Image (cartoon, rainbow, N blue to C red):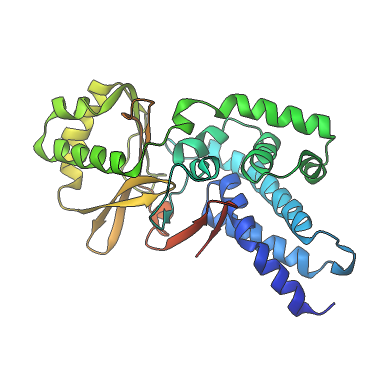
Length: 304
């Protein structure tokens, strides 16, 4: 078999592999490495005997991700401060009525819930529930029995069905909340800000030891409101602030000149109030935000 057809097949599947790898690893750089390793394996394999190229490539990519997760766990122990997944900017136009599970599976809140799972639980859940792979195919990918695969998916589902991971209000509601959030910070009104926050709201920052960020997670509407008004308001004052689509929800991106210095993602409770605020300050995780990506909500694929 010539190289050209093999490359064509791989490039057709690549966006789905990228969508899987990013959700598995919460890092675009790590996802790209996993997909590249998958390509190298594909190139060195006798493709004539492969009856289902997509299943083969998915298996290879999944196992590359599992290997990366083992190493990531060791690195995470030494990470400075709270850890937040790398945010990505996507094209606008997300419709919460269309392919809800796949769209919500990109949110920061959902990706953090996946951190509760073992690597195999994470893979099984994503392949089955997000990418709609049949149980027998997922079991073969993971090298387990179909019964064991069903157990992995069942256990994973119990951890990721919480309201924070699942509720995403319409974009116009998010825009109203974020505009009111910014106005409250600009005017220094903790009363107005507290009204936007769930009582159990949490705010966490990720500086990765490379930018100033809180080392603890703030909890409660009063404490979060005071911090936002007293600290964030001062830090954001010299910045140009844009509301952009970040990981399936509307988020805030702060520019200092041409440099992105902060990105803020949000999660909502069932009443549409802010329940989680994720403040990304780590410059390594902000580097890709200027590049707008595309997400196919019917397949979970991600591409430039």
